[in-house]
Amino acid sequence: MILKIILAAAMAAAMLIPGKRALHMFQQNRYEQGRYTGWIKDSVNANMSGIILTAVFSAIGLILGLVLKGTLRTIALTVLLCAAAALWFMNEKGKNYIKPLVYTARVKRQIIVMVILAAFLITLVLVFKAEWLAAAVSLICPWLLIYPMALITSPVEAAVRNHYLNEAKQILADHSDLIKIGITGSYGKTSTKNIMQAMISEAYNSLMTPASYNTPMGITRTIREMLKPIHKVFVCEMGADHVGDITELMEFIHPSIGVVTTIGPQHLATFGSQENITREKMQMIELLPSNGLGILNYDNEFIRSYKVKNNVRTVTYGIHTEGVDYLAKDITYHRNGSRFTVVNGDDEVVIETKLLGEHNIQNILSAIAAARYLNVDWKTIQRAAKTMKQVEHRLELKTINGRRFIDDAFNSNPSGSAMALNVLSTMPGRRLIVTPGMIDLGKKQEEINKEFGKKMKDKADTVILVGKNQTKPIYEGLRESGFDMDQVIVFDTVREALTFVYQTTTPEDTILLENDLPDAFNN
Image (cartoon, rainbow, N blue to C red; front, top):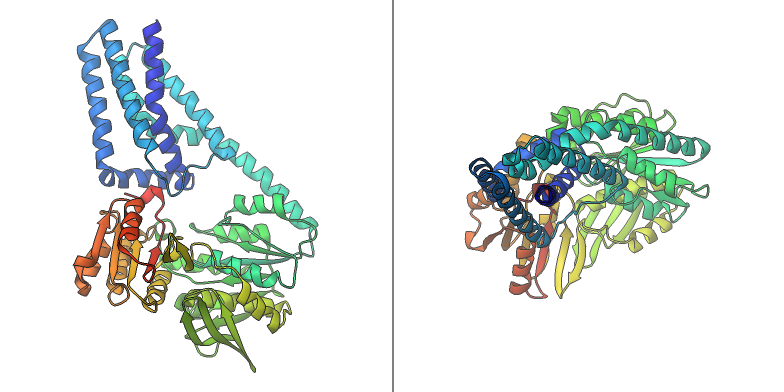
């Protein structure tokens, strides 16, 4: 009996790290079973060493379980599972996750259910004397327990979600004079939100959704925990990766001012088509009240060509499009930021900012449009632009260990990556780019990353790719463009890439960090 208990403990220990890893990937795939299944399929090829190791341990366990009998079998399986558990623990200890598992209340509930399910499986193995299955159950089943766990917890999560959503809706209803600004787009939402907050807060007591809180529950948490009666403006980022997401958020928040930053092939895998993406993002404007204001980036072709089915007043902005309401011209970049002139009717106002890149200038234009609509004067706008902080991980100039970086590590996209390369090309000294490429672009991902590689020619002197499998299209694009392939280096991890950067660069060089690949895709 004691040996059986020890075997059960060994099984539990062997399940611990795979179970934690499975929960981590389930969280990074937004608790969606379909996305999690897609990740598992992608990992079969990308993480072959881990798959082989699991298969070897499982096969050895099956052989031992079938060949040996009685006490000797129990001891052998216990030793095997302890060895597997020790190997997993050692491997996990050395990992430095870009986005570690966050132990939210939801995850804690999931852990409880996972533990119960694992205990049930272990009990079945021992009660029905199926010890020969002990290794396979311990090493493979943790990845599969996500599915029954999600099924069991979904009613609880739905009830929790509805309770908090209704509470947040009531708070908004009680705050009837609150000016609500909704911001959406395929890219640029968070940057625009931060810029909008910096500008609007110069004249109003305003609140914005923090970090990337752009889902119903993230926005709900912001309202419940942060919104106070003193706030006059609520700047709300609204994300979407499925049809119906913006509609749901608009019906929840009911903003009177809506901004669409840009539209492109982001989340094609879940939207299904570019038409679905465009239609969904433009719900931000189509669901505004008739006395509200829509603010549109007319440099974006998908926005410019869309026929809005709402009589709400709209204003437009851009850099390359004539006839917009807010035009940026005479743009210059320098090592400390940007300078440009805003043309609005008869007004021509010079704006200086620490922010870099055309897309940040576009984001500033959208914030200016909202600020002017709310009667913020030009001097206040100029002061806000000049003093606003750089947006973290979005073309953020920073010095680390004596090296000059342009940190554009947040969720790279085709438009933003092209602008980042243009900014890099204006920098003095040697120019390097560190990137794992772009993700979540569906069937076009390979094509877009290949074009990304082609665009690096004459923009960067050295290219450092992270992830051999992930970056194959970039490598091919670089080769086809005629880039000096002796200046293309591929590493397995971000840590290895940065070690190389620190060893081979000087303070006069500039290093662009383009995209911070989530661990779910870091293979």
